[in-house]
Structures are given as structure tokens and as C-alpha cells.
Length: 267
Length: 347
Image 1 (tube, each protein chain N blue to C red):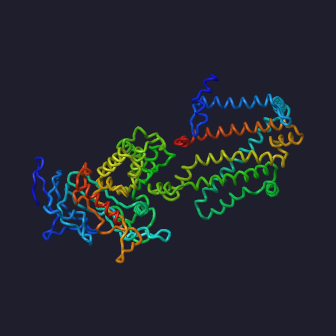
Image 2: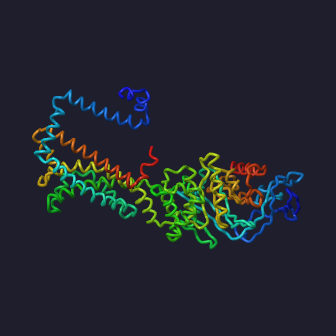
Image 3: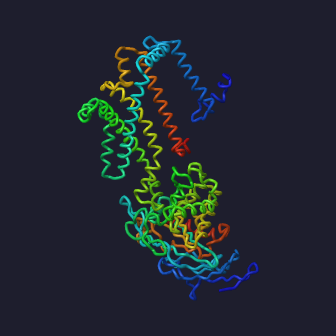
């Protein structure tokens, strides 16, 4: 088996530019890389870096005594709520760019991604009542500005040929826009949402430390970091990483199910 | 007129010449709707030639008048109502005159005992403004001056009245082939009728086995057929093809030619307008041609904006070069193509 993997043909397919290795070869390579990383971690620990055993033990402790799963769920549900609202808002703002009157709003929304959240939370706290609302509104704001940037750039890829095609079929301007931009680019919008979901996870840890009343995995991470429990920090980071990877997979799955044409013709 | 016997049949060859030796010029854009011509079927390559080689039919005087010459393999045909009229169309884009005073008229051509649509061609060098002309004829942009009128009612063109198949054969990538045709058919028909029309077109264009496929899975030829069928399903007999032969191999060109002939025999009023720089293929299909070029002023300077000069309007039906199955093999065809090439080089 091992010798089969190291055959000249397989090696060439892994190192030649734009090559397409067989699925089995590629999977074997990924498994080997992960195993190598774990072995290195297991047998050659660095001084400051917790060992694999310590991280695993810490993970067990976090799950059993500190409610890691519940905290993860709390953060996840907040993140999903924020993402849903932000997606609707961003789609609305982006689609409204069809009307020149609303283009400055989309432009301004896109530029607001440069604002820092720390100052922003203060204004949010003045406007809404509960800590949860503050958290949610900050996340929605943060995600929306990133989503608008991605979505408007998708809309800008619309070509004159695409619009002309719809018009020559006798469609009105709104109907052409709906067919070409709304329906035609829905799969790309989902991809923008997938890519920007990570932004919410980055923000949520920050927001949860600012508003600690509801807990969440961000607060758990903050506490572990504060008491220099590096094994715990690493364990939580790995959990977030795994959650993110799972989310990505779910989005890819959704894209395949709802937009089967999306992956066709891609090199 | 002279009467010849060929292949057991009698064919009537009508001389073009008027008594004084001058010919009727290429029909003018206006007023030829009821002009009948009566050339009879003549499939022979034995074309009567004058002893001293006279000017060829497409060679014209300075005013655009045609020269005396026996027409080649001419079929019986007659002209009826106008289907598309370009009247003094000019356009300037980014302060550059692109097109100037374009005049052309496509008439409904009829042939006895058959449905004969029209295939007309607009030639022009790359970058001369052919695509702009396409967009004007499709109603996608308004000309700076002049008008485009379409249909038997000669209404000003608006988007959707003229089917327009663009160079890369766009389809809605998010819809299956069936849905692509259905969305077009529903513009003109009630849902039940639309489905029937779509099924009929899928069969007619040999696309029925691919109805559930997305455009990304169609071959180049299938995509072309689909794009043409989609436009036919919602346009009013007029279909405009922008560079339909560009980048295609010989087999694919034959396929597109077959489709065009198929379209023009589906309905008497079906008209295919080919805008192309592929002289040979377009000439082989067309019954009327217009050559876009630049004119020079009295001082010899180039006049901005491409136009169609009177001597660059060709009636291939009148010349006897239209509707032949293998016209490319005929020497007169080769001569005409060479003439066009020379005109393009000189423009």
C-alpha cells in the first residue's frame, strides 16, 4: 500500500502544476500529512507549546466541567442569528445598487468594514436594551459590511452580454435584473456568505468578552487565556476550527443541493 | 430571354439587361416591396457568357448602378413587404462616429411552392462597428439619428422584437436547457402552449435528449442550437446572429449553416440577419448582402463612421447566387467573394 502511494506516477500527479491526482491518492496524502503533524506534535513538543496529551486532557475537562458544548451552542446560535439577519440586509443593500439612488449606501456600507468594534459597541449599548441585543447588533453590523463588499463585487461581475441576453428575450429591466443578477448569481452569493461567516467567529470572541452575561465560547477562551491555560486555549481554538470546517462543508453541501449547476464547468 | 434545355427540363433565363444595355440597379431600400422578378430555376453551371468579358453583375458604376450581365443560377422569386428597415442610422460613441447614414431594407422574399425565409448578411472588417449595428438592430441601444423599423407593421424596434444571438451564445447558466427555452416561450405564450412549443423546438433542433442538462454541460453545437431556439421562441420572426461562424471548425460551421437554413424554411417570414466578417460562409447562405466600409471625401480623406455605399449593396438572388446547395463550388461565387475581398481591402 505504502509503495503504491510512492509510485512515480502518483508523485508526479502531486507535484506537477495543475495536475489532477486520483481521489484515493489525494485522500491518502491528506491523511499522511495530518498524521505526520500529529506525530511531530506528540514526539517533539516545544517548550511553550502544550503537548497533544495536555490538549486532549484539557478538552475533556472543558467539556465535562466547564460546559464547552453548551457554550459552543450558545455562540453558534448567536452567530447563526447574526448571519441570517446580516445576509438579508446585505442582499437587500446590494440588490438596491441597481437603483443609482441607493449606490452611495452600498458604497458607505462597504467602507464601514474599516470601523473598529470597540467604539461601536458603546453606541450599540445606547441604542438597544439587553446585552444579547448589543452582541447581536454588533455582529450583524460587522458581518453586513463585509457581506455587502463581497456581494456588490459579485453583482459587478455581471456583463453587458448577460443583461442583453435577458433583454432580447423581451424581459423588462427589473425582470432582466431578477433573472440575471438575483437568480443567476444566487450561488455566488451563498459562496460570499460562506467565506464571510468566519468574520463572525472572529468577532464573536471579542464581543462575548465585552458582554459576559450570556457566556459563550469566546468568554471561555478569554478565561483560559487570562489564567494562561494554554492547553485549554489550544483546545478551544481547535474546537472553533473544527466547527468552522464543518460549517464550510455544510455550505458546500447546500450549494451542491440547491445550485447543482454551480460547480459545472469549473476547472 | 432565352430558352434552354437542361436535364430534361426547360429553363428560362431572363437577361438582366434593359433594351439600352443598362440594368435595373440593386433594388432601392424603399419601394421594392411589390417588385417581382421572374428568373426561373436554372441549376446548370453552363452560364451564358458574353464573347467579350463584360463587367460582372456585382461590378457597378460610380453611382452604384448595376452592369449588364447574365445572372447565374437564378431561382424564381419575388419581393413583398419590408421586414426590417434601417433608415439613416448613425451613432457616435465616446465622441467617435461609429456608424454613419446606414440605409438598408430587408424584404420578405417569396419563392413558388415553398416557404422561403430570408438570410441577409452585413459584412465588415473587425472593429468597424458591426456589433454596435447588431445592438441597434436588436433595439438594445438607440441610434443617435435615424430609425430602425421591424415587422410587417414596420414598428420602431424595442428589445425583444428581434432575437439576438450574441457571439458566445449566452444562455441562463442557472436554468436547465428546457427551462431556458421555457422562460423564453413564456414571454409569448400561455404556460401550457409554451411547454408545447418548447417540446416542439427541442425535437426540431435535436436537443430533446439534453433537455435536463445545464448549459455548462452542452457542447458548442448544442449551445448554439439552444441559443437560436431560445431567441426564436420569443422573437417575431427576426433573428440576428453576431459573428455566428467565429472560431468554429468546418464541421461546426456546416452545423450552423444547417440550422440557419432550417430556421428560414420554418416560416415564410423568418429572417436571419448575419453580421460577420466571414465572407465565404455568409455569402453562401445569404440572398442579400451589405458591406460596411468607410468612404473618402473629395480630397481623398477618410470620412469618419462606417457606412454602406450604394455600390456595396448586393442582391445575391438577382445575381443568381442565392439558395444553391453547393454554391461555394461555383466559379461565379469565387469571383464574387474575391470582389468583396477587394472591396474590403480598398475600404
